Structures are given as structure tokens and as C-alpha cells.
Length: 205
Image (cartoon, rainbow, N blue to C red):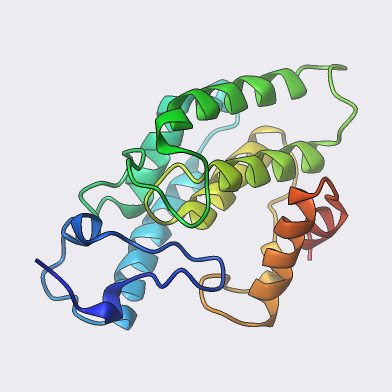
């Protein structure tokens, strides 16, 4: 069993700790340190973003607001690295809902967003709808790892489907600790309390 702590996601700075069984799901056998894990995940995610750029807007909204797409997107982003990519977590984490409720919560969320996107049905702008979906998905924390990155790409798909310019997410890489990541986490914490202003600003900064 893999036990090298350098490949653990440490549970700090908004990251999620992995259980030993989840670490066993690591596909590349060469990975022994965190930097190698980060590089492998980044390469996999870059492939997923290339698919976003190819996505046609026609019918896209219906496709992405579906719990099956939620799982497929995570597998597309992390399937080269983790065997459990695209599978809802079964373990308790330092953040997120009870794992037994994940399926219901995700289905409820995408159904809510469908309603928010109906013409004249929502008081929110397209940016606000996508930001609220992003926050809700992070709050659910459906997967063992990669939830923030997954929720950001899902929001990117939504804003594309709605015909708006891409989000910039602080114009920086958000995986490692730093000033921009801390702004992002502060925005999420404020949204936890019902104040979305920081998050609305951040996604376009």
C-alpha cells in the first residue's frame, strides 16, 4: 500500500485529505512525491480544458446540468491519475456533506440550476448563477479530491453555455497556497454565510 505522505493532500488551505484506500487508486506508478502528483493532475486537467474549448453551445446547457455529466467531467479531469475519478466519495472528509447524501444533493443542485437558467425565472445574472452553482458544488464536495478544480471547470462550462465570456478566477493558478488562493477561499467562506459579493468579484478578476 502506498503510504508516502508526500503524495497526500494535506487537508490544509482548503485541500482534502485522502484515505489510504484512495491513495491506492493512484494510477501512475512513478509518482512518489507531491510535485509529481501535481504535474500529472495538471496534464490531465489540461486535456479536459481542451474539450471545453471544443464544446459547441447548441444544447450544451442541457448536457452539463445533469448528474451524469458531473461525474463524467471529474473522470475526464482526473481519470489518467486516479482509478476512482468520476465516482462519488464514500468516505467522510474535513469538508463536504455526508457521503450517503451526495447523489441526491448533486441531482437537486443541477435541477435547481436548470430552473435558475430558465428565461425570466431567476433574479440572478448569468455570472451569479454560475458562481452560486460553483459554491454549492464545492460545499457538497462530491469526490475524494479535486473538487474545487472540478467545480470551476463545471462553472466554466455553464458560463460558456450561457454565452458569456470565460471566467478568469483571479488570473492565477489556484491549486497551491498563495495570496490569490486565499482570496478565493475567503470568497467561498463568505458565500457560506450568504454573502456572494467577493465570489462574484473574484470570478472576473
